[in-house]
Image (cartoon, rainbow, N blue to C red):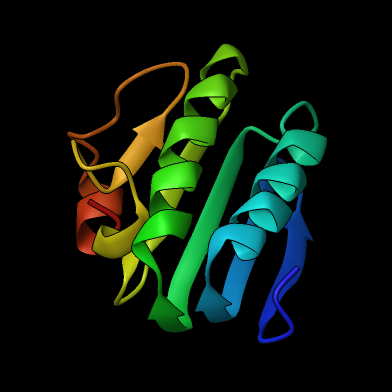
Length: 114
């Protein structure tokens, strides 16, 4: 894990909130993916807040996108929020829903999630 990267976690019934802080590089990616894998069976939704990210490295983003595809087998929704959500989320949209498409959600749009 990068020495300049941390993940703060807040758990709510059914939802896991992750706040990413620091630099997002290759080792940060593996730390985040491992956190997602470990919690995918326990939660219905995982919200990833990117407001506190500093430098985002293209290599880390590329690895993240490749590994994120493996999470589609879980029945979870992964939402990317914050100023830098568009820099690390999958290119097709800011939200990746593993089980269904909620892009029409008024709540998600109002909260800036999509």
